[in-house]
Length: 201
Image (cartoon, rainbow, N blue to C red; front, side):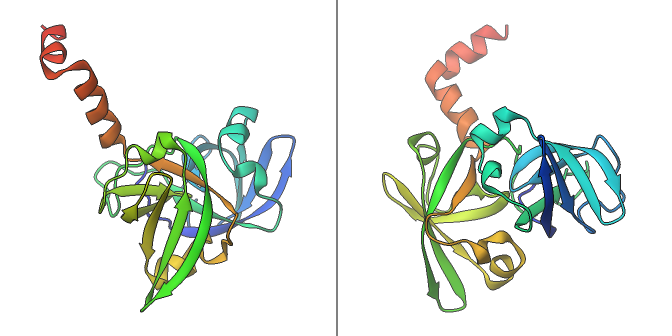
């Protein structure tokens, strides 16, 4: 489980036969082999660890369902270690299970912030509400507006500069994860509260 608060912008050093080696100093500090880590919002497992870098195995399934297949050596990646029980939840509860890949449409400056518009498939758009949560490349963000096919987020300068968002261009792919609470709510409403209660007795 994660919070969507990126602690470091790492760099992909190499991608060989499904093994990503990533430069990192902060995100893996105190970590060990077998730990979970979110890479651009995708939950992966550390398989090797040395000073200043770590490796993860990336399966073909992960490459199909996320934008990690577009990341090449030298490009930055957002990193967040798994949430420790009792730790701060600065964003929202994030599983690291990417729901879909979206596409960045536009970046506009507004005052001291940036408005970023992203096109997303229906399986993500259905869970969005104004002022609700959305995870973009592992970053917990707030939805400021949306229509049938796109949503907009307001990004403060710190997040823009310390994550990969500041380097994204229109057309770039981004990993999206909808709020898990919205998914649970939908499931309960579909089954009916009465049915859910009766099935547990």
